[in-house]
Length: 122
Image 1 (cartoon, rainbow, N blue to C red):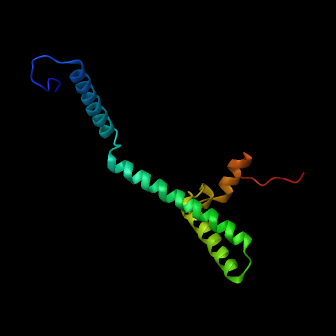
Image 2: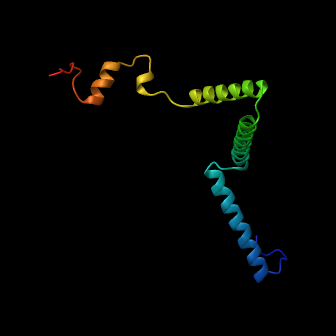
Image 3: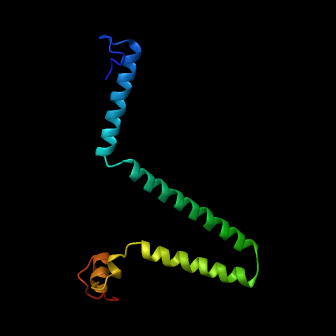
């Protein structure tokens, strides 16, 4: 790798270039083993860019709708709030109390620390 001019000896410049080549190869191999190849980096950067674009758009639309008063703005504001609410509902995870087989009495008993008996007023 290092003796590029085939003289049988390695000059300082050839050694430095060879060392840089070995370092680059080691870094590339380590990055690929970690699963952070160029394809993954492109996907992550694209997702991050789209997220930032969505955030800036959301803030811009919010400011425009706050400062403008018309029927169209009121309708668009309602759609924006509804859309963000639906997106938030779909993204978040449901709690234990929201499941189909959730037992509210057991959840309350777990919170107040008793076996579910009714509390006496006395």
